Length: 308
Ligand SMILES: *[C@@H]1O[C@H](CO)[C@@H](O)[C@H](O)[C@H]1NC(C)=O
Ligand SMILES: *[C@@H]1O[C@H](CO)[C@@H](O)[C@H](O)[C@H]1NC(C)=O
Ligand SMILES: *[C@@H]1O[C@H](CO)[C@@H](O)[C@H](O)[C@H]1NC(C)=O
Ligand SMILES: *[C@@H]1O[C@H](CO)[C@@H](O)[C@H](O)[C@H]1NC(C)=O
Ligand SMILES: *[C@@H]1O[C@H](CO)[C@@H](O)[C@H](O)[C@H]1NC(C)=O
Ligand SMILES: *[C@@H]1O[C@H](CO)[C@@H](O)[C@H](O)[C@H]1NC(C)=O
Ligand SMILES: *[C@@H]1O[C@H](CO)[C@@H](O)[C@H](O)[C@H]1NC(C)=O
Image (cartoon, rainbow, N blue to C red; front, side):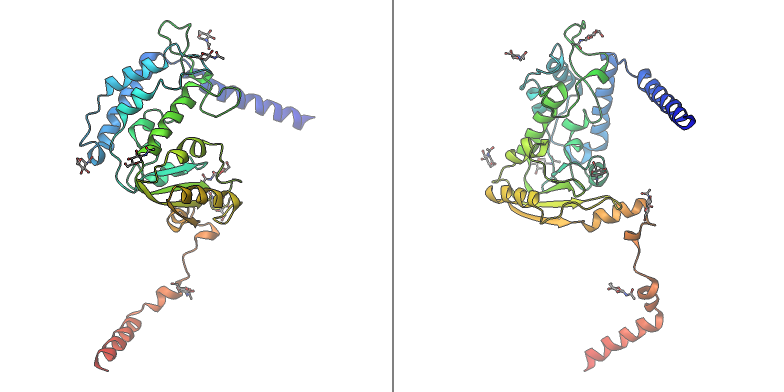
């Protein structure tokens, strides 16, 4: 009884304290969202701009106007399919060849891996996605400016049967479509090997990106099967869902390949947990072999080879 009581109290404290945190920031004036949007836009120009925006004229205030116009007074679950097209078109910019990285089920790891465009550009490393990453929003027709002031009450981005067209899901759908159409060169797809199926056909990648990847512009697609060090491996390159994905690429005349547990991914994981058993550096034997005497021996053999 005491134990039950204690855990109920603990649960109550947890709920109250986490609720308190949500509560504090739950009201968001439209002016505040606007500042956040403009701030992110300027930050993007500064951080990513020198590499990719030289040829673009991005007008952050204009982008905000387009977003505001798209969202205001829109219904919660019957958002207009075409509302974001102006914004997405205006926010598109150059992405270097071979740098497109599609993914499903691996956020936030994929954002760490892409390294702000230094390695790859996920959709959230493009300005279009960056401005909305980790943000909630929707319209509300009974507000004076048509924007919901309690974004945590918005339906979110999950593709559910009960609310198929929310402000957020229509946004990510439109952005995914444009991102996929834009892709060229060799592309990569990162999937979660701890989820079965690792390639879910009913997903942003399956529904909106894969069908829009253009086989004339994309020649090769490399699938990366990744998992956290201690997570189970439920799918590999030879699983049905991955064969299915490879077949979709082949159909488009894109040559597919697949890597289980890519080495650079594993090394990145290990940088967080070098004590993990998968992260042992080969024992000192190899290194201790590299003594001056050993190097001298190698040199002698090389010299002998030259003279013989
Ligand atoms: C700018 O445009 C030129 C050609 O129009 C292209 O070759 C170059 O890659 C572009 N650079 C950037 C950073 O957009
Ligand atoms: C959703 O919106 C469209 C037009 O914007 C309208 O024709 C349709 O009746 C609406 N559906 C519902 C369920 O409200
Ligand atoms: C794979 O999915 C599981 C379950 O959702 C999640 O816990 C894990 O962090 C994901 N792995 C990666 C690399 O994102
Ligand atoms: C719009 O906002 C008002 C005021 O916060 C709220 O009472 C109402 O439930 C909201 N409407 C919708 C459709 O969410
Ligand atoms: C695919 O790319 C080619 C070359 O850029 C273009 O001509 C074609 O219209 C694109 N196809 C689609 C469906 O967008
Ligand atoms: C690191 O790996 C060990 C197992 O090798 C595991 O017990 C520990 O929880 C991991 N730590 C983190 C931070 O993932
Ligand atoms: C030395 O390194 C090689 C790979 O570079 C490895 O196959 C071998 O097992 C290592 N030897 C020892 C004794 O660790």
